[in-house]
View 1: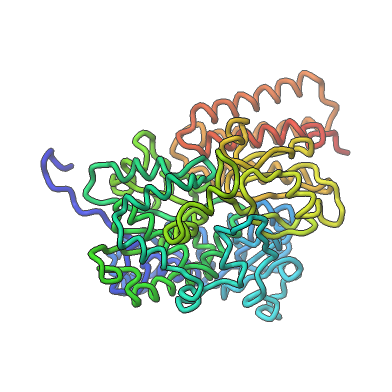
View 2: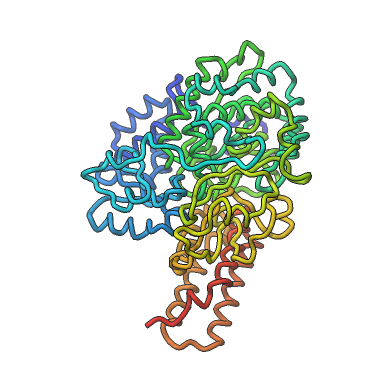
Length: 573
């Protein structure tokens, strides 16, 4: 215990680079992927020497990555269990692989929702669609999709703000990025005070899933603090983040430039990219981009001969992260636990190591270079007055024409589904849509006629979430979809608060009990009692959960059960 006025020990920065060798946690997570736990003393000592961490810290970090550890030193197949892959049969795929005595781990999302199902082999090569469903460990690498073309992509906006480089094939290297104008915005911003970037953000009206971004930036910049952090995250813990994976693999320098511009605006000296450890190619590409940018003095000390310094580190995220909730990500970076924190104070006031911390998705960051270089006109000229700018939507393989599309805010959802995506795959009618991940919105066919605008959707009780669109076809196994909801709730909950820790288990128990009743002639009062008990649990989670994960998830689950109750819980022979 430290007495008042004594000096606290310096915080442990697990994520900081060691002698320019990259993220120590990336080194440890890659080692854990290939070796069984617990690690032998010799391996721990070697990792400690390589990463600059204490041996006790190496052991703690290895435990953080336990979910991806090898079994008997044989790296397992990583089988995606995200929503799109689950609907494409990944649950049965995993069962069939395990019957063949292949070691498998289920992971939250691999970022291939447009071509589901997906898996990674022991060399981190990806397999999607038929290549995943018919995976042959003996043919292996020849079936993988390394080097294959980008998914179908299009912009329906006059000026794409998020996908401009991906639409041209990407800019993975610094040379390619510079040829496409990346870092020109940073050069411009370094010649002006950070307040100019704040003013541009306000003028643009740039919006995220929860509304306009600028107010949080102003709060962070206005705090009286010696330093600040900025964190960019790839929608950790949520399904449908295809665009995040592609930005990191094919356009990483735009992400780095955006992180630097955000830091310049709020007065931060260090940025962290929170990338799922399940995205090995994204981690490698981003590490390479950081090295390139640092060598070119676009990151690091006295950037471009200015008096401003900014360092970027990687944090490979693992385990539970409450669907990417901001304080949970911060706690994972700080403590290697990942538990939600009470608010207030908001992260912009007291976040990582109690310093003001700005947390932004990659889609926001990649727009900042253009904003700094060209001004706010491209945003105000698109979208609506209340929601300027654009948004990227990822449509899964359940649509006739899956892929990524950038649209102006205000675009009609039904038009996107029926005209751009062509409705359901193989002409199958759609029962419902999941918009924005399992914590977003669940919509029946009669609920698609509305503009995709964050503020208007919030006013209507809808959530845009991460921009993913997952189709639920008439042929879908609705009981399996319900099981997926429940597994996600239980698997992503950080366990900090009682309603979110115990609520999913209670819902699972109720659902199982009612499914047993469905096998016999149930009485009407049984259904009434079960629905009432479920509603009590949902309401308790919404009111009592500490963070947005537990507060938001009951909404779409309630809607799913309302739509499909009789079809899920019908008498079975």
